[in-house]
Image 1 (spheres, rainbow, N blue to C red):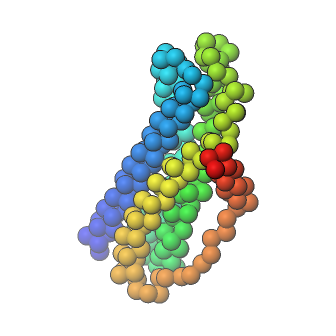
Image 2: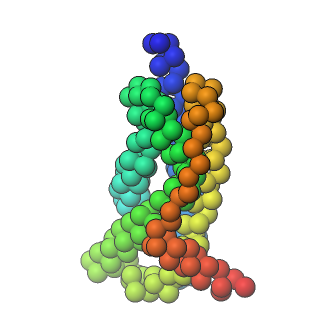
Length: 210
């Protein structure tokens, strides 16, 4: 029993590590893309590019901590089985349902709290830097690119979805092997209204490219 539990924990920790790396590379790709787009759009000189990188280095880790905390909350049903040792069929069904929805939950997290937190944090930091730090571009000017922000976040969401869909399959296979086909429960995921609105914003962000 102890060896089986250790194997279960290792499987879950590998899933977490790969999910965190997907989050890191997705966030880095989005931040680099944002830096290039803003730098070229506003015609920043070289020192402003460095200034923007410094602002990003301050804001991004705070957003990441909040985002990863939220992700762990979303994974609570799976964590109860793979880390806390819950061994009932009902707990396994909840974990399986959680893993089925995990790729879409990841997209919703990136396009919802992550996007809003990133925009809010960066715009506040830009406002402070513009008022008292000599940063040449203010938050109101940044809003000219507002339709593009959800489009940029969608790049991160795609990475999270693909990695989440790939990695969750391993845990789902373990649950089917451990508990049998009874663990498989069909269910529908309700998409909150705010995420539907953000989906429309992504579509609006695509319009200037058409």
